[in-house]
Length: 90
Image (cartoon, rainbow, N blue to C red; front, top):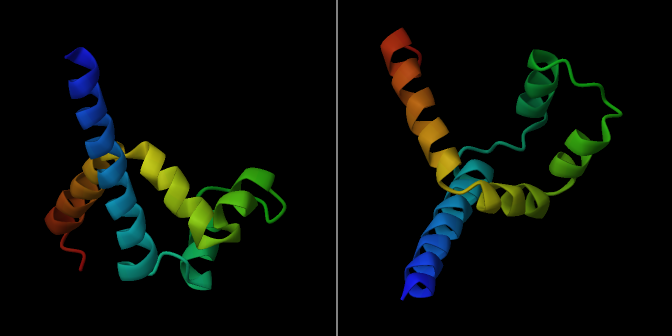
């Protein structure tokens, strides 16, 4: 019975991550050159960093990583939305 509930939790975790990845790629348009360059400048990332280049190389890599992160992305998105609402940022 434990394996059944564990598999349900795993399916929920991965599906939430998949939805958040799809939202970031296709709704929030995270893969604009403008947003990627802003991310690089905010986090002091060089243009030749292998990890960041692999993540931003294509959309599928980003969706796979976000799928594995799961609910953590949802929580981070909710917290960011609350902070932006308190600061008055649109």
